[in-house]
Length: 190
Image 1 (cartoon, rainbow, N blue to C red):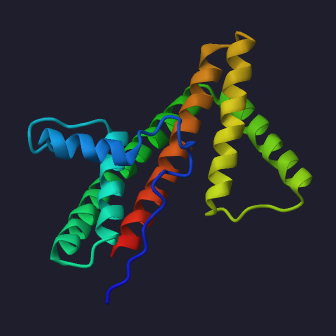
Image 2 (image 1 turned 135 degrees about the horizontal axis):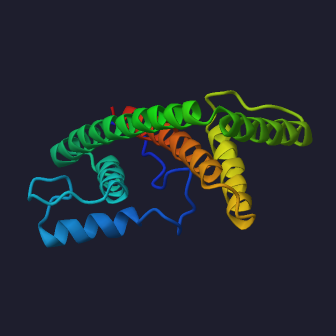
């Protein structure tokens, strides 16, 4: 008998009802429509829908112990590898953009970095321990800190350059987290 572990259906960086679509619903909609969300029908669904579809395919494959389940698992793994590659490319593009923005205005980049690191240090002191750098909680905390900063900058009508720097950094951190989560999901399927 084969045993498989199923990945968490929702990515860790979104609440169950937030930005991420319900994988079961997305999967069922595409299965009943006959369309392939991954481009076979000249339709490429948004990244979140394709990820939801792949995660649900993986979950359903883990519930089966037959050749169809094995095929579903292989398909899910391949889809997740493709999605991981897309997330990695997006992450690299965001890193380059952040570096370019930082070079264009070093003073603002330093201010954003200092404020962020000070807030992270404050949270570590309150919590009493630091997370390992590769711990997903470290990514989630950084996203939360940057969200807070962006919100405050927007409310205070600060310079658009500051907002763009903080927003780009937040997107880059979220892209890194996406890469890790998707990579973990397809490793579980293997």
